[in-house]
Image (cartoon, rainbow, N blue to C red; front, side, top):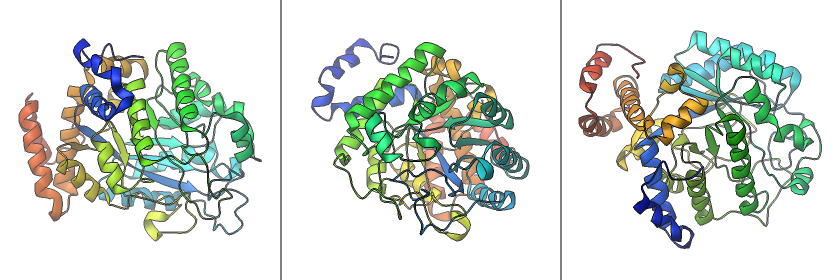
Length: 415
């Protein structure tokens, strides 16, 4: 993957000195806007279980954390959490579960996914779960999962083995090959990442890009998203510190490297990071962000116990949307590509050819219009209306007529 289809020759010349100053961030921003425009997609994680049979030393869910208060959501509890999030305006959720084959395996995930789709206004569910067999991945795809997400954590084998001393996750190769199994089972959209701070980020970032390129060569598409999680404190973890801690400056550089290495992929920034740093990343290449997150089961309803890691940005969805709009960007709750079959190689080709940008602009505005009509607080409604008007005037294509349909009660308008 290179920039040839994204940037003209005169702009590619700027990449000569990329890693010697702030140019990397400016070029990353321009590449992101050429692919996706000004939209930033928002979602929330929904943690289903912290009952785990692995002993990952850096994680609060690890089996060795004897002080952990364990919780595995029932179908009814998961529905309550999803309904609460839908009532705040979310349209896409990332279901997150620890590894326990009996409590949170494929049977459980199928029931949860079906119940949420049938009983809430959530439009797409992505899944971050333990690696599965091809047969179980087929069931997960049939259930309606959008993106399957799984992180290698670190590609450095000695470090991986030290930090994963027991449980199924200790099998490095089973995890390494998970994306091949998911793709073979029918997933065209997969999400990848490394946990920055476990090992030298230069090695892990390079390895993740190499892994992504191997998938691209083999299947015609690589990861739909590249997440940029950084190691944060976790209560009850067995990992007290690392000589490989990643600075804020390096963190921003890593996000830019991902954007430039795979321009079509979504670069995802979680609420692990501070509000200030996330606002900077909105302007330098990030394209998807979680907002208003809780990282424990039943965390939205009860602010409950044992979280996977500490949250840095504690702003609500409303507040993050306001921040994005204040930066001259467009907060988006769009799920259109999953309805229109734009995934895998088709999505990559549309993104690299800059055709996805116009679709993203319209769909972002439709979803933002819905949010303004149904969910926005009085404090941010006028700001979002202003951004809608500014961007809609640029978009054309009868967008104001479709706004009227939304005002009249039509929902899930998309192209």
